[in-house]
Length: 460
Image 1 (tube, rainbow, N blue to C red):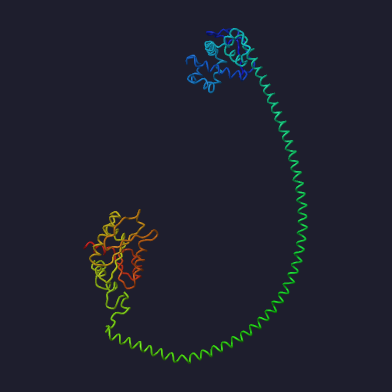
Image 2: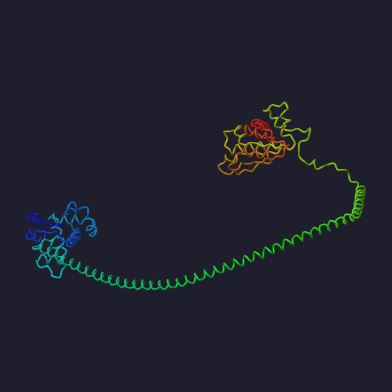
């Protein structure tokens, strides 16, 4: 901060401004030392709180409620500029400093600053109070600060020099230690190289001995091969001899078999006599028990359509309309009839506006009554893809309720049910879906329209 004053800038007076005219005429022709500037801001920040808002410059009024430390932090430049340029503000601050009874302020007003005081504190107070000779005090403080800074820099340089010397000595010691370590490692490497050379020579000798052993082993292998060939020839001769003996043994075995067959005829005669005895005893037991003749044969237990019995195809040839509910009654009157219902196909045909759960309950109630009247097996199939959550449903008596699994449609489940039935059993499938009807017809079932079942249930 460079402070330049002209004689006209300090004409305003104030209470307690004993520096008066002499101090105001002086001019500081160099920048205010930074240490002095900080102390000036600190003095102004402390004295700031004793002034009213009206006594403050407009630029500083927003900091009136700040603490001294916050003023120094946020309004330091503004307060320094106000002290430098606003004579009235500076005089008010001077008055506040004199009112606090500061010994340093009294000493400066009397013209004899204490010799033991900090030069920067003296310069800062003199800069605010502006007594006679304040410029000299500020200049002396700056020179003292420069001297102290130079001394500190010299001391820092000495400390740095000592540190560098210590690091150099340490580096030299580490270098010597590293050199000794490298020398030791080199010596160890030389010894290891000598050892490796000795091992190499020993290994070469071992290889030569191994080569000699290999040659010896090859010679022994050749002799073993010759011995093996001789043994093989001997084994072939022995094999031919054994084959001869085997042929002789087979001839002897065949002769013994012929002898056994000739002696077995007597045994066969005895066995036949025993069998005749058992048969005669069984016939006598049958006469004694008087068992009736068998009237049921295993073939009679197989479930099939016999000639003369009606089938779903026979019902189709009668003179009933496809929309006549009596047709469904005739189909369900067939022995062991099984009614398979495409649930949603029927409900969406008969009452599509109802919620799905109401549709299911209404259809299942009608099917339960139909099952009770006809005695037929009834299975109702619903598409599981239509459900947002599992259905908690108690199936009515006489009706089997099935939902298709994820990934399987109700149509496919109906086809699986038809394929699971044995050929010849009457199976009636209720669905308006043409693809379902054609598929089950090929599998032997009798398709009927959903409207036919709805009419039959309405009659119940």
